[in-house]
Image (cartoon, rainbow, N blue to C red; front, side, top):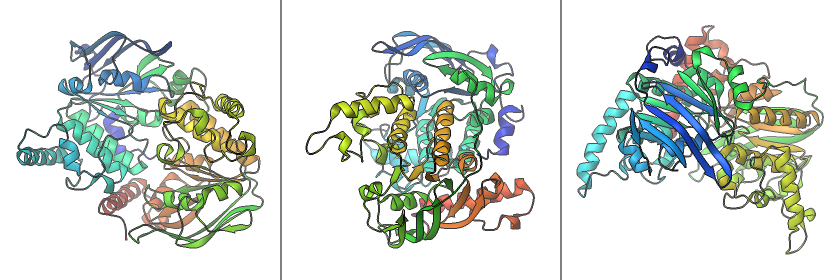
Length: 559
């Protein structure tokens, strides 16, 4: 991912920002946790956790999926109560029985999955629960003025009357931050804040966080993305299996050291792969056009091919047609025109089951909306879409023993924690939910695998594992179509890269294409050579293009 140079400068080189190493350690910390413990049955989610967070700093908390990061922050925000230990906020010992108390003492939280009402406006979401008494209009008018002040001060500009359902995720996240600031938060917790953001949106978020820190706010940042930790934080604490491994000044560590602290072993950060050996054509898409309910074309006359033995990546800013393209190929939605050919057979009807029978597997981008039924246990989620296979039984009765055995095997192979087939999907961490979906689809021996955002919300150790499995599938002669907003992931895994902008494929590049070149194409610049050789100027122009695209999306979509 490209990280904004201004943010880097503010973060760790001592210019224009506070850092954890400038004497703040002698001041009363904003947050001090002592001996925090939390158990769920016999399992320790947090065990004897000590943590100090300096005022006016950005403090990262990292760890593998299931390491206890979110549980610890949920204790601080009042969602859970610790079984043991003490919490100090600005030097005062506090008991936090619920989120109302957390908000009252100045703690706000932006959750990984946003807590917004889709058919409410931005303003209505911000004031929800703090409307200001029975005279609603007076409270709303006051809130509108305060919202404008906050938006101007922290570059969180957004239309207060826009409906949440019409906003891209980057703007929805700004609403969540505004909600917390409106309620008086001086300490802001962000749980995996870039998990659903594009590179451009993440860059903008980092600029916002830098400004919040400069204004004296304290930021707790939960993430698995180590490059982001290095770019924006002042100090970082590492958790592993419910315990605190240690805390270090960001300027005194490295990505490699942090990865090893997280996992407890050396981690391969770069994807190792040999050259591809593409053979027969497995997937062919010809002149595909997808139109939404408003009659707007989201995918426009797209054509490409994917062969056995190669990974074709699709790069693009979120909202430029990649999601609709994947859903049309998978049979989830019907294309207005064009054709999709799988293993030499043309298929046009929107029938996902039919395409599975033809040798296609699909890891959807949104594991909650289309990948899992979170109220179902893992063993039932593991057969979704494949429940008609004979090995699971015939007629009205399923072979529960076979399903249980296969689920256990898949969970062990993909290191799903805990490896409990009876546990509801909702009770797994986000990364382990992702492993459930990946195991279900990748273990079916498909001819063509469609995979969207394979490592969204997944920790560094699991990313290494997933990337390795995808390369193994390619080397076994499988065809893979990959969509990811992580440009590093696209560049590392892909043998060919297609770039989408405004619903069209604007070009194809080889695996060695530079981040700058791809980023410019993603911003709608068809010929990056026209931009000149100055990478800073090019990056700024690309960001401007992307910001304009986000504004258009917020207004109701590109025409």
